[in-house]
Image (cartoon, rainbow, N blue to C red; front, side):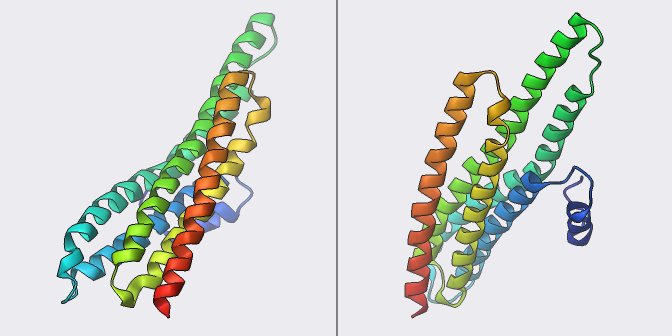
Length: 208
């Protein structure tokens, strides 16, 4: 998949019986949409008279949100590539003991890659959630609801990515890696739940 694929084509592919794109790519795209919402709040605020006092903060948030949006957009394809690598490993020959051994190694390497892709997505989505608070606090009131949409999208993406981490963990033989990945995703989920709810409440409060 290319990054400039139309929304309609992506959704049609997602809805099809094809193995990719799947939930991991969807999570990355949802997260990118969340980051885009934060950027929009910043851009509108920067263009409004009377918002000069927060211009420095909004420019800093926008720099971060655009960086995160670019990373998450790239992850749409990264997830597809990780899944395809794992599938290629499963298709390796296994007629001899040597082939079985090489196939098993390739599968384990593929599983780690397929775990790391959504884990990285979750990390970046947590960053989006983190900067959403600043947009919600300082953004122009006329678009403050979009800060809420942004944080909720990032939270949904984080939780979605966590499922794509969890599905691979039971098959990993590297228990140290699996345990560390599980601990990290649990920490990210805890942060995302707490912070996204706080930002949502803040937005609701500003809406009156």
